Image (cartoon, rainbow, N blue to C red):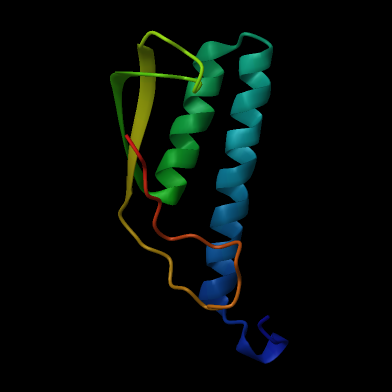
Length: 103
């Protein structure tokens, strides 16, 4: 855990960006619930711009459960961040910087 003396202006600004992006995603989800698709798309695009993410949607055939006997279409979202956050606390198990997928 970081102490107060290690908090800098850039870390505060980065935290504000993360909070704004999270709020935009939540707002987009609420709008989707009420079928406001155009507004939700704008909220998701704003969150994407704040976090500087590149998204690529693709699909693949696969099994959804281990008991399924036939393949169905699976949506796959590939993401790439332009900025990789620096890991400040290596002991924090809740921070993941690399995700591995099994196909």
